Image 1: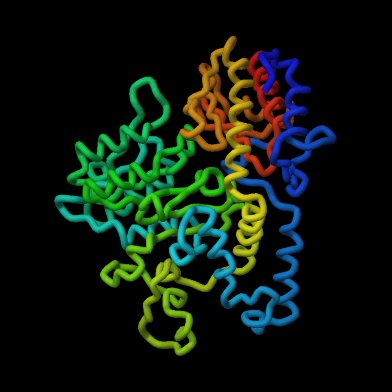
Image 2: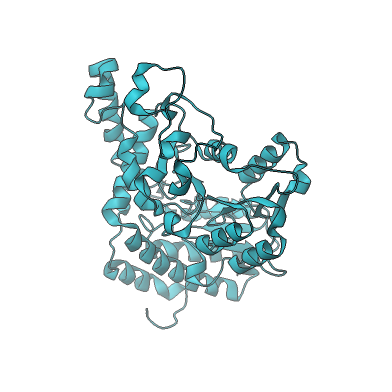
Length: 428
C-alpha cells in the first residue's frame, strides 16, 4: 500500500488496489441496490447479505420440478427433495470446520439455539448459570433468559453477562477465560457470539471452549456473525455445539434457513434429552411409519421436519459460491479490505468526534468496523449516507454505525466511498 494520502486523493489508490488484488471481486454476481444511475456501496452484509443473481434461476428449477412432477419430485426432481438437505451437509461442514455428520441445515437460528439447549442446558441447583456477553444480540439474551425461567430459575440470577474492561467496547477472550477459571463452579452453559454483532470482536473459540470444559460447563456458540465471515474450526476447537443463520455473510435471503453443529463426542449419547420429529429418525426406516424414533448418530438427530426446499435452495447456492472461492481466500481479502477501510476512517476520526470501537488487531475482528459517533443520533446519519451518497450501513442507536466490507462483493473503491461519505455527512 502506498504512503499517506489525503482522503480526497485516495480514489485512484482504491481503484488500483481493486485492479491488483489477488482475489477478484464477485460483485457482478450480486444484485446491488441502485443509486444515482449506478450502484450503492453495500456495507450492511452483516445484517442482510445481497441476493445472488443466479438465485432466480435456481428457484425456478425447483418450481418447474414441482409443476412437472408434483409429489414425485421427492425422488425424481433434478435435485430430489427427499435427501435434499444432504446436499448442504459437506459444504456447511467445510464452512464451519466440522465433520459432515456434525452439521445439519434446518430451522432458524433461535429455534436451533432452543433445540440445542434442550440437550445441553442441564441445570442443577448448584450449577445452573449461563454466561453470555453483556452486548449479546437481544435474541440470544431472550433465549437464555427464557431457558433459565423454563427450568425454574430466576433469569436475573442465572444469566451472567460479561462486560468489557472499563473504557473498552469489546470483550477480550482472555477475560472470559479468567472469569471461568475464577467463577465457573456454578456455570452450566457458556453461550457467546464467536463474532460479536455490535463491536465486531472475534473471540477465541478454542480457548474459551477449553476454559468452559475446565470449569465443568458446556461450550455453545452463536455463529450468526461468524459463519461465512471468518475461518472456523469447530471440531478441532472442541466446541460442544453451535448454531448460525445464513442471511448475513452467507447471502441466502431474509430469514433463510439456519445451521447447527454438534460435536461428534455427543452424537451417540442416548442420555441427551431431545425434542423429536419425523426427520429425527433413521432415514432407512422413516417410511416404516414406526411410532418411536430410531436414533441416528449425526446432527440429523436434532432435526424435526422435512426441509423446506424453496428455503433451502438459496442456502445451497450460497454454500456452492463459498466453496468455489474458498473461505481462506475470502478471509485474506476481508483482512485487506477491513485494514484499508480502517486507514481511511482514521482520517475521518482524526478531526471529528468519531472513534472506531472494533479491535485494531486483524485476528480479533471479522469483516466489520463499528464507528462510534459522539453526540449524534446515527439513524439520520445512516439515512443521509444512503440517500445522498449511496452508502448502505447499519445504525445501532444511539451512536454506532456498523460497516461490513464483505469480501464477496465489497471493493476498495467502496471503502473509499464510505469513508468520504461519512466525512461529508458529519461535516454537514
